[in-house]
Length: 138
Image 1 (cartoon, rainbow, N blue to C red):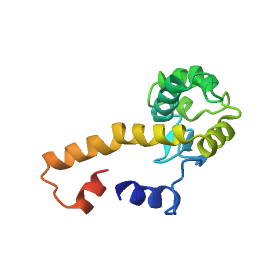
Image 2: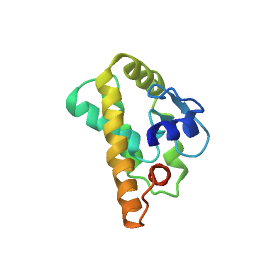
Image 3: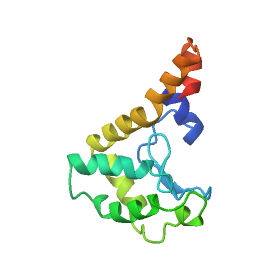
Image 4: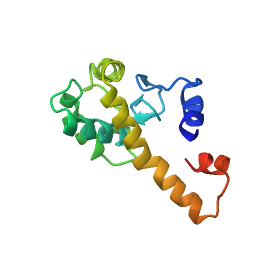
């Protein structure tokens, strides 16, 4: 349920946005997939790197060097928003999301690892017990 609520806030829909990939103009590069992974905050890189371990040489693999370069930039630079060297990224993300259930599963797994599990742990530490409260922590 928490993922569904997040999807409504991210994409305004109850249909999961695995294939969505666009530049929102928020300084984080491209925003993509299930929970809005971004090229400027390293979580899109985490998804692609995890997928590349399972399926090396995909259309997204070629973006790993540039995403790695971006991941090493200071957090206060405009460089994290720069997508000039990511031509074809949005199309590749969308195409693989639509055609490969493994890529969608990787998005689920990375979202759980980076956001759901830590959110639930923080909620538990804070004494959150209701499902709505747990969803909010996510």
